[in-house]
Length: 298
Length: 107
Length: 83
Image (cartoon, each protein chain N blue to C red):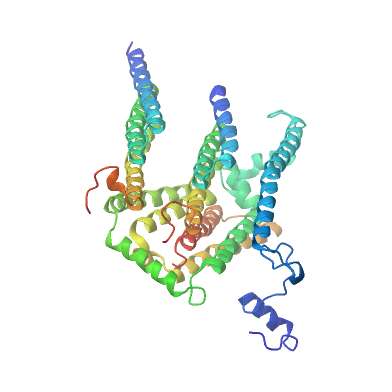
């Protein structure tokens, strides 16, 4: 593969390495089946006994070490709990002016009656932006590893997949389909309720988005990938996923801009839209994980 | 007087539901084969949920949470049998010598 | 109510101990699911319904689905080995 590695630029070498065309030098610490040097080559029986001996030793010490580590962790955690202040005391360190400010001015500053939503999406919205980015990148990483394309699929896998699809298409599960036909609209309705009602009641972007993703998973499991492609194919999926994150970034940018310039906040429906954006990102993450883990393509 | 009767009815439903759940768990442990155990769990589940939720509605009186409880009950009665059906179907598909254990209907 | 809380906490400890001690991975996943459900009830008893909804949806639903799919992918479930 690599003809003249020294003459190529480091960028080309990196690209080759990322594509998997070029093997890095074997500098790994733990090589499982490394060939022993020629002068100390042993017979198979010797190998077997040595392996058995090592396995035996491992089996003997592994539980002991595991229990010791667990006990140490438990001790540390118990000690930490013992030194914690009593639950619900008035003069605890968490009851300072920050919490008071949130509770007092949360409604008028953010326009959401649920203090948790106000905190997650407005006061600490930057953290939530980071979380949304983490979810987005997680799906991207899983896609890199598990997405099926011509390069990483061989004939055998393709045939197996086609056989499974054929079985599923020949014997559609009528009971599951009927149940899903009744349930999926209500699941979506409940998801939207939780999503859009996050301002005034428990819920919000993360839980609503998860329920939305679960509804998509139910639909996909009941009706198969062919029907699912009508609702959401790869392009639409990518569009929705990106749209959620971009919407969040834009809205929160406006939010930060308004707040930093001491401008009055007339945008009362802001939390609702941010909730919707987070919900879209989370739903796409959950559904994408399911699809990529189960089939590897949309 | 009326309240007392309602409470007694509710408690009776609740206790009967708990008994049904207990027998379902007992069946899950006691029976040997997968389909039998699943049957015990599924039947006990459906009847137990019905009895417990009706008992709760009687105890609580008719209100908005009671209506929500009815919705929960509807949802569980819709989904729990489907889940059991899927488990049973998977068992029938994956076990090659299912005919030794029970009779299977051809599809 | 405090009795219920203690029962749930005991259940949490039992589930947490049982999950790594199970012989089969499938059992471990189911025990973890039970752990998540108990945790969801406990969150709602601790008056954090937001967390309860998320825990019930993510912990008991989505995570178990992903675990099952992973087990299927690495052929650790009965009947998914292709022979």
